[in-house]
Length: 416
Ligand SMILES: [Zn+2]
Image (cartoon, rainbow, N blue to C red; front, side, top):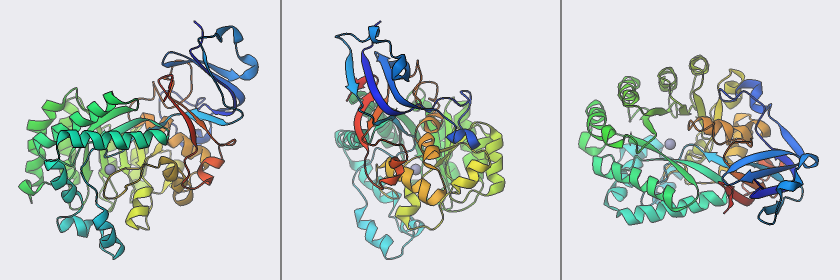
């Protein structure tokens, strides 16, 4: 079969390949993956079929039917995997920005009926078509940043009807444009006003009435384990029920306090534990020992919340915890879709090297979605999700702070 797409003259081809394939990259392996210089990558249909140095290119597979891109010495890498977003919501919280600047904390604003609950009010009354249009606009922006797979959480409905609508909108948004969307159910985002003071009752309702309706619709079940949201024990009971129904597990934990949610979820087999800003060394060791749970670090959140404490990325890498980086795109604590900025901030504030940070937004982020067999690296047989960047050395990627280095985005073998 001739190649349907060929990218030639890649100055640096960041393959992300060369490490273990049965677990996420951890420790020294996070930076121990292959970069090919003066290389090509070739695709047939939606799959990568060959890559290597230009001298190894089989020109007989390049025909009049082959789309040929000349990278002209630029960096070429896998599409970014954005493994933690709250994609679907109505309105925005620009009006709270000023309150934050004047010193009100995230939990103060939440306690006064603002924060997540103000987005819940707007989202509950928004027509489905408006939610879909918003999601599609955000996905278009994400695609321009080179995101080719994106996880989308519900969580701004907090009632059965709206939560099911949010998952439905995420799935429909995935069908209407090229970025692959992975839906996660975060009905357990905070306790809704209807269940004020009764978090365990709300979780029982979700487990009994809502989760069964989402089998086959959402891949993962997530919960916000935090003071003012759900306790570790309530979270454990809920995640155990979700696991019994066949869902993969995720958790928001140790964002603002060290409660122990990350270690608990890792020991239940969660694919990821997210935030980890206050994760202790002892609990990090438990996450590492769990085997394949990825710590998803979200450096734009402490930045936007003006919080001094960032997740101890360098320490987690040293302890052998697999790490990924994401934006946490949402209207309250991170209204940014710029995963490149998150990558830079992980270098500046969490001690990542550029090479480690690149693995954290590609292959390890794919592990956090249980998709590493299909995406996250450039290898024969994987999906042809590929970026051509307008830089000549990978070290420039975190260096050009806040810039978008993407020149060309290829999703499933198609230039988009
Ligand atoms: Zn989040």
